[in-house]
Image 1 (cartoon, one colour):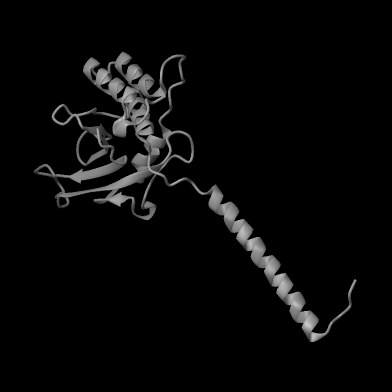
Image 2 (cartoon, rainbow, N blue to C red):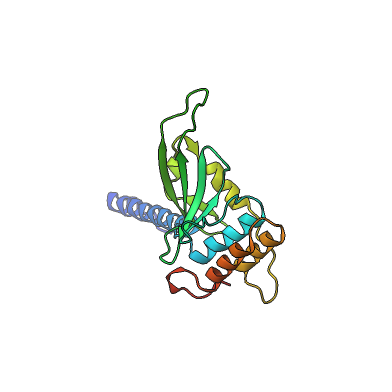
Length: 204
């Protein structure tokens, strides 16, 4: 073991210690970065599977409007404010949550001014880390805390898989059995599961 305490040796020892500390910090940072939730856009198949299970669980209060079958809406509220998620077909747009305020009159106390805005959702559904807003620090839209609704989406149970039936279709079939969607809506979404947007492979 060296007992060299000259100024040069001390500086070298200090530099070596600093490099070891820096290396440890960089390694820890890399591990932390690898552990952070994914921020990729929600795939079309994941979004469709979410819609089916949300409908079956009673959380999706309204399905695709017949006036615009290319806009796929899952209504999360039954009235005011209007909170819903949206995707589109055949050109897939990222799953997003929208809040719309079109105040009915009269309201007491007076309603806030009309407002409409949205936040894209990223992540996976399921499994963890789940869905999150692309701008998590501003999940309040038009005065509505959308994180509450995102939490509802993340808590929706996924139906147990059945042999020979895709997870994408299963939720919609369960919703139909429960009388929560029509036969036409079931057929519409089953076709989308087989032929998802952007010519993607059939959903499993």
